[in-house]
Amino acid sequence: PMGGVIETICWFQMQSRTAVGLKNICSQDMQKKTIQALRKFGKEYQLKLPKELIYFPKHHAPSESAVESLSYFRKIGYHVICFVDSETQSLDAIANEKDTRDILLLQADTVYRSNDKPMTAGVEKGSTYELRELVNEKDLPPTIDLVWHGINDRENLRQFLSSNIQWGEVDVQTVHEDGSVLLQHDNPLEEETLLTGKINLQLNELLVEFQQHGKAVKVDFKDKSNVLSESIKLLKKHGFNDQNIWLNGNIDVLKEDGFKMLSAAFPNAVIQTSVDFICPLVFSLPDQAKKILTQLKGWGINRFSINWEMKKCSALMYQLKKWGFEVNVYNATDLEQFLKVMILSPRSITSDFNFPEWNYYGRGSGKNGIQSDYVEQQVKFK
Image (cartoon, rainbow, N blue to C red; front, side):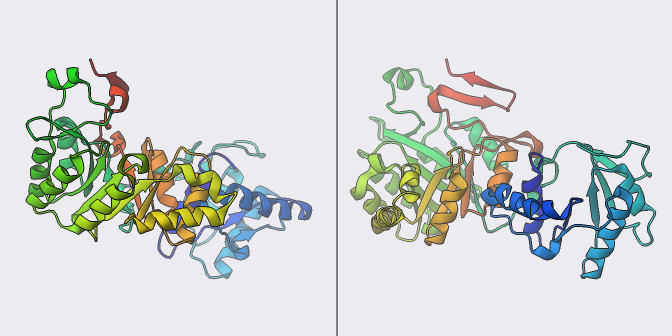
């Protein structure tokens, strides 16, 4: 299928009281191969189509097969509200049938066999399948927590506070000599950075703003030392409770004692770590992988984070969910990728929210000194 077709089908399947039916004109020998192809291409998103929703019409001419398919889906109890076809003859035939005025007719301007002739008025035409053109922010499922990534400067903070996103993530790096907890992604902090005042936001100031705007905070620890204790003090000072706290760090940074320290301070908060490293083990020695994850859970970790750009990300997520672990997905770089992750139904998604389509202009965390300048380009810190 064309790029985006499977994702579009899956998105519609997520909606209440909505089903997607497929018709395909092919020989009897090709019918089994068609079903196998759907399973193959839909595997990443766990696409499931009941047999009754895959119809192979007896008529092979575009117009007759379209009318036959419409009749079939109506007879098995579905109210057809949209009909997508690449053949203009098919759409014309549907338009000329009785009781079809409430059906949205869409032509996929892709591959078709019949002559391209003028279509019945009211047929919309397009050549791509993109979720970002289909989905509005209000359509997002409320069961998935959304996190605005890398709020380490005032401009990104301003963008986040004006958004509808509840969770905001900050990177805590080290404690300055004056006792302030500094926000920056990269490690280690260079003395030049401190001297030139490039860090324009501190954790204390940020937490005040979060509380005033009713936001929840996710703290990503890039350093250990005395950052943990000072950050815990600030979170408690500003009245954040466990339901509004999310704490994250790499295993090699926080280690067992660090995670247990965070869990003891906020026993009902989300405690998270990245487990990209476990992917090869999950599919080669699953019992050993599950044992390791269970051990990490004993440290107080209750959510595992995985990279969307990692190969087998979706398969890894489904396996972790099958084992009973909560999963966060990060690094969905644009709106289209973000919506594709949404189809997988992770427990949460962390993103820069650089989505101009929704008037969100997240700048990113400043990793490697780079932040996005409203998606058109990237700017390097000087």
